Amino acid sequence: MREVAIIGIGMTKFGELWTKSLRDIFVEAALKAIDDAGVDHIDSMYVGTMTPGLFVGQEHIGALMADYLGTAPIPSVRIESACASGGFAFRQAFIDVASGINDIVLAGGVEKMTDGADVTYALSTAADQEYECYHGITFPGLYAMIANIYFHKYGASRKHLAMIAVKNHKNGALNPNAQFQGEITIDDVLNATMVADPISVMDSSPVSDGAACVIVTTVEIAKKLGKPVVKVIGSGAATDTIALHQRKDILNLDAVKFSAERAYKMAGITPTDIGFAEVHDCFTIAELCIMEELGFCERGKAYQMVEKGETALEGRIPINPSGGLKSKGHPVGATGIAQIVEVVEQLRGNAGKRQIKNARIGLTQNMGGSGASSVVHIFKIE
Amino acid sequence: MPSPRYTREIPQRYRLEAAKCKKCGKIFFPPRLVCSNCKSREFEKITLSEEGKIVTYTTIRVAPEQFSTQVPYNIAIIELNDGVRLMAQVVDCKPEDMAIGKPVRMVFRKIQEEGAAGIICYGYKAVLA
Ligand SMILES: [Zn+2]
Image (spheres, rainbow over the protein chains, first blue to last red):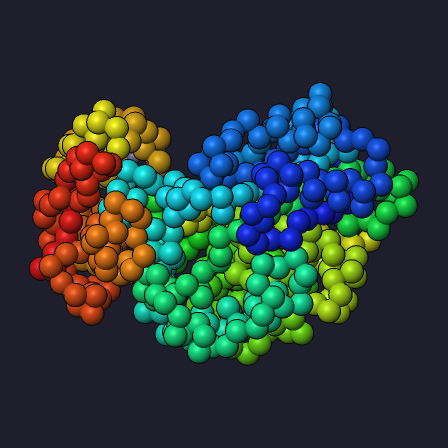
């Protein structure tokens, strides 16, 4: 296996991009990444997107994006794993370069959610249509069920979830690409409209448009190009039951655990080596469960880490320095790539006001549905 | 929901029919073609217990379109007495009546109306026992 590095990153601002089309936001992010890498060609591309067919009536995304990026006739294919589509697209690009099949590969993600489609329905297609959605469950509802059992078992409360939202908005306020750039208070979250008890609208990530792209190549080529070498030292992916109720323990996100274990193993490191992480906080409760599955603390203790400020920007292990899905926005297919963009910015020391001191090793975790798929990557600056 | 799909699922929705692995005994609801536990492909058809308890729950206040007239409604993961878990609405009670561990009983009810023609879809819901 060849050693792989990221040499270019680019993303659009996340938010309601009503004046821009699906293809234009993707190409905007891709051109930024290509310019940042300083390459004159790419060999293949992988485009993560969840359901452009339902959001804007467009499928066949791989070919469309290669056409409008002007890279056709290179191979270009769309990768789908619900909200983890971006992370899985990156993994394919990593495999493509590591295997020696291609040298310079683009991994991107894109979603256009605000063009008028029924967003609740489109997102719910990532759950079990016949045995979950048929009975009226929603994604906030699934995570609310996880939250209720977490509260029951460990004694956490809505206040702890609110602390996560407050922390992520505080970080997002420092990120010029974030959808929301304003701080919020605990009371803003506690007093917000309930969506599915105990999850309020302020515990939920927003509906967003956006795209993000990265350029992947070998460490050898990265060095020849004179680029800062951000190495991909670990990649892991896993799956779990599609329906939440089919899991032995509702609180165990096994796909997250297995994807992390595989990435740690490839990297030859342990959770204590991770300096900071971008994780899939689609709802505040998800951030808590993910921290535990990634091994950042014991099971049932994540809310105490949050309470002590250990996951804040200046804490022991900053989580979601970008603002996370909650504040930065969650254009589902783009999210996994945008997480990687943030980690590269941090490792290069280019994160501006939200720069983490001595950032050396960063992790990304991207998840589909209520945790039926998860992909983890670990990055290190040389 | 297209009618072939609805018709296909009637044994599960109307009668709680499940498949029990002949080799390891694991019960699957809905039935599967291969056992995820022991990889056996031999099953016997069984009917699930109608009694169980709440594993976890929520109250939906923002619903998909076909459920929007029902809000707020309770929905739970229920573990039936044979150990099988499923998701169902818990009806004829208030949100504050819901709690982890409470016993429930499965009942046959209307679930939703489908599309502009208002086709009625049936299935199981739960009531507090
Ligand atoms: Zn079996």
